[in-house]
Image (cartoon, rainbow, N blue to C red; front, side):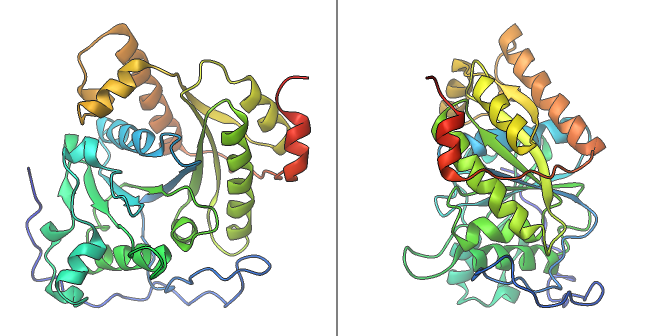
Length: 311
């Protein structure tokens, strides 16, 4: 496995403040989310945060999207934001140590860490970090995301990065869920064409819109995943004001790629593989080109029951 050389001459350099700190305001009514240090700004990279119901395929989507960006010649960093730390294993072929793990080993003296302690180079040069999380019931995942960005800034790993992808856990009420929204330019929602996934997407829309009051993050769009059809997604999108950016069908080759610990871009060529690779490449190109942000209005929970499904 390739690791990055340690920039030892830069590791201890303090973070520089980028502009004045924003006014202290709540992130929506009743918010008790962790507040990020205003100095921890990622910089010039385009930052995407990938959301969706637990188990919907966010990590598979994030990893293949990272590779697609790298195939377009972009320097990519993927940050896994889930305590189970499996976001990047198809890129690195291993469960890499988490930021919280390596910080614990040095008693949270971050100046003692080397870059290769917490950053691995994955397939096609995608750089990989797993933030991890505190032991259950002992702390907030938002703190871990903040420490991860701080380390990346201290080691200047964001200076030469074009694209940052946060792969975020599915719990809408968690600080670890909310923290990447304070860094992202666009939030992407992965969903299947079913009620539970769309119900979760509606809650995610509400969370993103709350953060958008005080941060630059905006809704980027929807990635339909593991679905032959998109009729229920389309119906929901039409009501709330979202749009589908890509459609990844329910293909067995995707399941097999996970078992092989490989991205779709490493699988044996076939018309099926080429089609899904092209879908990811088109998505990456569209996201890089940018576009108008979406302003969606989430539905009331009970209204979704009336909207979706069959009579």
